[in-house]
Image (cartoon, rainbow, N blue to C red):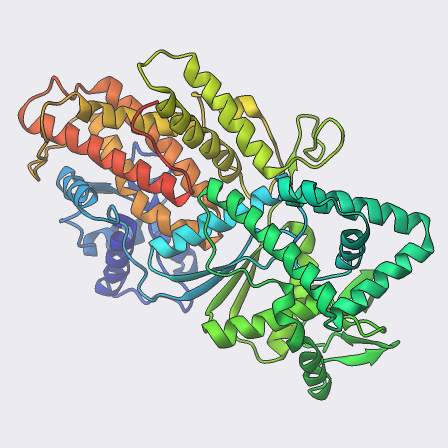
Length: 583
């Protein structure tokens, strides 16, 4: 990682120059915003000069004189008001290329200190189909888990499915009175949803039906054998369906520990919080109030009403004895900390749940939990009209339906091209392109912003799309298919052309990008990097003849193609996207 090496050398230069750094100030190096002046730059002298009350250019020159980077840079300049600009040498770039084509991790270093990270994502409900609303949590969570594993962390993925709650009273009543066994066999989830909707409508129209459903729920909670058996069958059928969906998406979970797993821990947890004085009884409910330890504007247990801060307690047990999501989440944290020794827990859940997690995290910390807990929030997926993405009839769009349609559209596009591919090959390519397009359309977005779902854009061969990136990978492999026999690449490299240098530089940045993604949990940084890499490769491909070159130039350019191929395949893999050799 050039940035890390240069940053380390820069910090050493301050010491060598006898410049004392103020407490909390760490000089750093970043990729240059204008590559005409260099590949990397630092504004450390400009920042520090203000504190030391000295001339920033003079300070930058002093640092430059002490900077030992001859093995990495061919040029160091001081520009503008005191920018320190560094240009890598062709030899350093060539050495990095050799590492990329030989290393299983394509030159990406492992973290110095590995953590155990639990990633909580997707979390669909039992007896309900996955829909388009699950796209963001599922794809973002999966990608972050892949990246964290790739750079050396121990990652545990836990799908905290919604398998408990008031809806099961209605589902159980419907199972007993309305279920069609043949339809259940043909499409379990669809039939369970139909039953639930019918009973829910009946309960709204007739108070007596609602009371029957409540009674069925109480029986379930008390361990009634028949109701427990129906519940278990609903869970089994749903998990089977989920496995099909996740299988189609190439997503795996280490655990499916749903809400029900923690039932026995809820009452003791509430009792403990009462005994510790963390929770209190208020109007019959058990709640957590503010303890006044933080400023009101940072306190999740307070809400501003006009000019006054009022209590916004976290309820962990209702007046009727029922527990809430917060209770289950606190018990879940306990389990993850105790059983898995989690250093960090990431919750990939929509932005509307921000207050919920702020309260849960604060309550857990008051109970002594030191594990770092992070809510990785995201926005919504919108239709072309700018409203929530739904079918024409107003129904939520099913996730499998989205994937299937993407594959169908990709298959139709494959049929339009005559490349001598068999139907089986076209089917496989369509599966990869279709599924990858849906994932990339999501992961190329800033997770905090809403975005419009567009079939035409996501399947386009132009622009920032999965087909464009996969096509760039295909072009790298096509070069090697044209060569007769096995190609042996050597370390004898000479980067001389501007297009060669630009591509080598972009490839070297992957080692930095792979780590940057987790700084703010943004897979779109990786997507944007891969798009820039594909663009840079296409420019190189147009500017530099590969197969018609000879000697060192040929070996260099083939090495650049191989390195690009490896980085594209690895990077797309970290987004959960497969590649194909032809398309």
